[in-house]
Amino acid sequence: MLEQVPDDVVGALKKAKHVVALTGAGVSAESGVPTFRDAMKGLWAKYNPMKLATPEAFERDPEMVSRWYDQRRQDCALVKPNPGHYALARMENSLLERGGAFSLLTQNVDRLHQQAGSRNVVELHGSILEWRCMKCGMKREERGGAFKEYPPRCECGGMRRPDVVWFGEQLLEEAIAAAERALVRCDLFFSIGTSAVVQPSASFIHVARGHGAKTVEINSESTPISGIVDWSIVGKSGEILPELVEKAFKANPKSQQESEQYSR
Ligand code: BJW
Ligand code: ZN
Picture 1 (cartoon, rainbow, N blue to C red):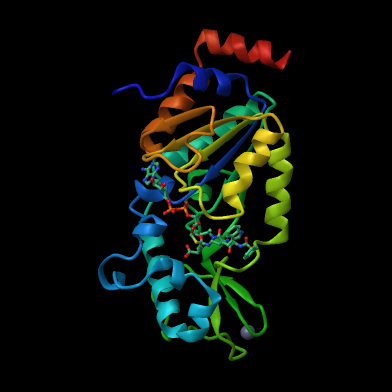
Picture 2: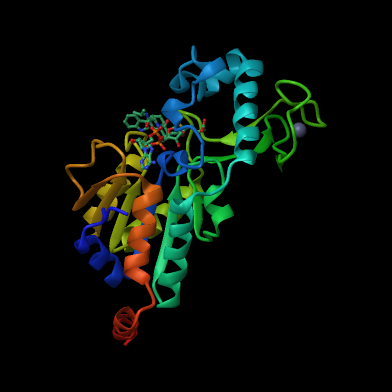
């Protein structure tokens, strides 16, 4: 296969102590999950996701918005993690094995990172699998078939909504705090498969850079941060990440030596 990862990036990962990866919809694209901006296909083609992912849209038309989310929730149950997800899980394990640290900050709501084995995952925008009652706050994971009514109702009679973060809503305080802690400590920051325009995640790269981290972008297209990062790799995360992780952590005598050197 064509080699796409610059040696410098492999070198940076080999010597990194604390890595942060910020991921977006592009990482799940090769699993068959439409990216956010591609999500309005077929039946939903006439809707604008920027307008649908808002509290105002739910208030105006809870039936339609909850149907859209329920369709996406059920689609998530049909897909599997791809090589990019697995490579990130391997990156975490390999870093932990040599005494390093890894934090995965994801904007994705599909839980595919956890399914692939990633452990230290911060769900910045919540999860589409969790639905919460807007009246009593009861939250429950939903893995079954389609809801019987839209919007689904709680036992208390309240309307239930997906436990995701919509435009104009605050991210969970714990998520922001966990992201901040990781960003100020990391020495290598990856932005992977995200259009890098939705705040506050879009500003994470500046925090990491401001604290001295080297930065890498992996994206199939260029984005507003492509000119800012130390290395921009244009390509599919499902191809780039396995190549990168294989090269940085392969268990050959040389890398064994390097990891011993590192732990001294
Ligand atoms: C591949 C690939 C492959 C494809 N391999 N790559 C400051 C200035 C201006 C505005 C604001 C601001 N601060 C806050 C705001 C408002 C707003 C915002 O950012 N607006 C911008 C649009 C300007 N932010 C918020 O409201 C946030 N809240 C907040 O900050 O609260 C405080 C506050 C509020 C209001 C004002 C000021 C302060 C909340 C944001 C919540 C976002 N929620 C969503 C929906 C979640 C539920 C759902 O899924 O429906 O999250 S929106 C949507 O965008 C979703 C995504 O997680 C998020 C990011 O999208 P992502 O992941 O980047 O996906 P795409 O589709 O955009 O891009 C995919 C990328 O992958 C592309 O680049 C492809 O090239 C690439 N790709 N295949 C590698 N195989
Ligand atoms: Zn309730």
